[in-house]
Length: 310
Image (tube, rainbow, N blue to C red; front, side, top):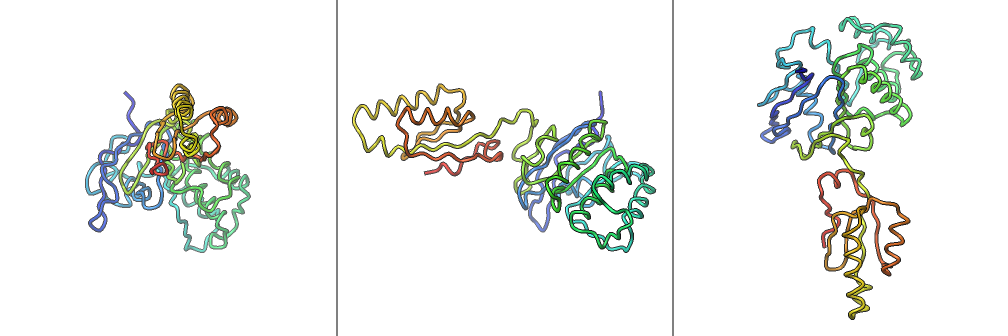
């Protein structure tokens, strides 16, 4: 039986008398990647800080390769790299000196690798850290975590400060390392930002895990369709009623339509098909007044469609 690289068991952290984390559990094997998702104040950063020992849990356990995270020796800590969201440099030193010091402490990584990655992202290794732009500062922090080839890499809001091109190139580089055995945790607000690079997800809301699972099991969010029934009601009579019932029956038989809801003033459903087919369906049943909205990933996973309430 293969031992998990990281195991989190019923982790609870109370801050100023209120829960920051409430019974969080998950496990990660070698070479896996987890997306920790949620908006502001969801608990992502407290979770990462507790996992990495920066904050101590009030209850539960964090195990790295079967050992309590709070009792790890220096050799085990050298296998873990954490890149926080906010990167602040205080020392007047160059990028090269920072990377040299990090590699010396970890005892892994080579200056050749560091130079190659810095060149890839147009980072001047002789530049002072305090003079770096926001983009270069974030790049250097991520490179500083990657270059030592950790067994567990943890990144908090990695995309902050990066342009899309740099962000995706860094993700590709990290993903290549993951495929060679490195375990990765990403924390970010949006599922779409990271879905192509993760095996599993964990969705937090106010410190609670409200959803989790395998990324491959997540369906495409699709679109929310609201068809107003005022036209049918205005026409009245048996023909209008018959047309309305036929429309509902066709929707229920369609494999591309889910979660049909018949409300007082509208019919709502989720649609995961081609927009042309949807247009033909609505035209066939004389649906002139309707609204098509993009469904967020979070709404799809939690099956909460507050926009549909009367």
